[in-house]
Amino acid sequence: MEPSGGCLSGPSNHNLNPAGDWGHWEVSDKVRLCRFLCYGSEGDVYTAAEDSHLDMAQAGALLSMLQDGRGIETVNEIRRFAQDGRSVTLDPSIFALALCSQHSEVTTKRAAFKAVKDVCRDPAHLFSFIQYKKELKQDMKCGIWGRALRKAVSDWYNGQDALSLAAVVTRCKQRGGWSHQDILRLSHTKPADEAIALISKYVAKGWKEVQVAYGDKKNTEEVVKVLSYLEVVEKVKHSCDETEVINLIEEHKLEREQLLTDHLKSKLVWRVLLKEMAIQSVLPILGKMTAKKVLEPGGAETQALCARIQTEAALKNEEMHPFSILLASEHYKRGQGYQGKTKWAADSHILKALDVAFYTSFLNVDPVGKSFVVAVDVSTSLSSVVPGTSISTAVAAAVITMVFARTEIGTHVLAYSEGALELCCVSADMTLAQTTDELVKIPGGSTDCTLPITWAIENGKAVDVFIILTNNPMWTFTASPVLTLRKHRQKSGCNSKLVMCGLTSVGHTIADTEDRGLLSICGFDLGAFSVIRNLAQDLL
Image (cartoon, rainbow, N blue to C red):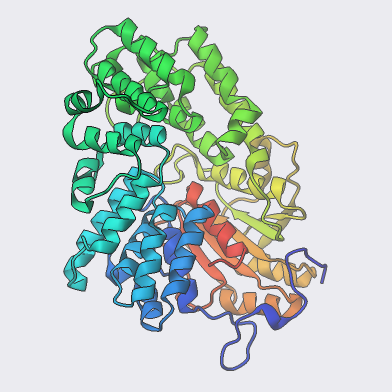
């Protein structure tokens, strides 16, 4: 077979099953834990945009590893997933860490609390950690506010830069029923220095008490800076003067979470906020800003925003992904929200800027370094859209294909249906429209995911990951997908994986195979790219 950069020449990289069949890649507790940390389920199905509540029933592998004395290994994996950005969302990692911190084994508990500052990077994460511990208290029959938790919370606050801490406690004041005031009180936090003590007093007692305590005192330079910042926050909270609010925002880089609701009724206030707002925060509200005339055709603010979202450096700094930009562009083009009555006339200059940003952002996608086959079986039906988006499944398949074709050397793209299969030419200079046309040249029909694997076997292609993209509600197989994949593994020497993406589906799955290399994706979102990446790198 043709060599592949990601393939190995023999079976040594496989986890053998007891029978020694290296074509079968078994699912271990460690794999199930990693799946849970990545997307909140130990199973082999990732459902896009799913927001399910986590509990102990979903964490069987984690509990099994703890019972087997593998607590330190578990905590280290939680930390790695959180720090390396491997997870679709941090919630499962935070839940897992909370569970480890309640474990009876001392070294595991100690390691979990030590990892809090690494996993819980902002107040919302810390609040979630505390809430999960509270919920687990019922099942674990143990308290939460022991000495270890009080120390972990104290270390979280004391480990922050004072000015940064002042900013975060005034931006994210409470979440999920917890506030900084609650946590500081319950943890009995002892401030590490005078600046942290000042912030603690501000949170617990309010600005007036701070003025009394520090107003006439000889303060350090750091305390003076924090005092000045908190004074600005208090000033803007009580100001009804639009000009004053705008000046305070510009001078001190205040954010919308630090303003009053009445302030956000002003077009001028929004225009100032948009200047410094992160691109990823601006994109979801483009329609609202256009509807409220904050962004007007030809206006200076519109021109400045368009220039910024096209800038390669700005897109790189925020690691903007082309799929995110396409979602925002298609939603903005739609001219109305999914809920409510807000409507707008899409600005052509903004649409053009989003188009430029879309193609520029492909530079932000880091290659996995594996060989891929992307096989597409989609119809061009306008009613076929990816759930929760304004994107047709044909366009979604095109952008997914472009991501792999542009970033992974030697990616093969196939269009197929009803037994017909054709190799497609998707080059880096092709537009989204051209790619879409190329992928739908074979009319959609029943989907047989074994055809691309059979094509690779017959043509001597050593492939690391097969990605099947379809909007077909009915799947048919001429042979077992599992057995066909194992046949390719045996012939190629690759740890080949198969990802089946039902772009419109809430239930496209293969029967439980207990094979680590198979994964189903229902729908599609930005998180699905992380899932595929983790699977390709043997992290799931």
